[in-house]
Length: 118
Image (cartoon, rainbow, N blue to C red; front, side, top):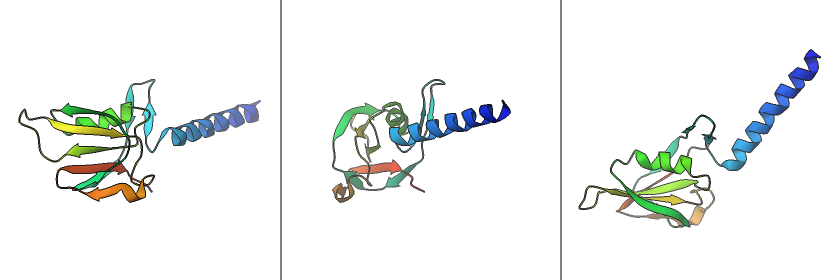
């Protein structure tokens, strides 16, 4: 009986790990409402790929949390400087620098953030 429970627990954790890998490069825990991700900055770079959505934020630290909350988001571009109202443009992207290798371009107006890859 103890072996069956151990096998069940091991399979459960393996399934969760595979599910997390399929969802993206960071953990999204919707039951607790908490997500986390480690993003690597590419300063003054812009990833030219499919934009899921774009919006303005008052604080640049809001953009990574919005990406984590969006299941189809893999990375984001954020404006270097705020607009005349003090807001930063944030673009959630359907790819990251590893999936869209040739689409990362130098840009004075944006920073790009993709998940860390170990």
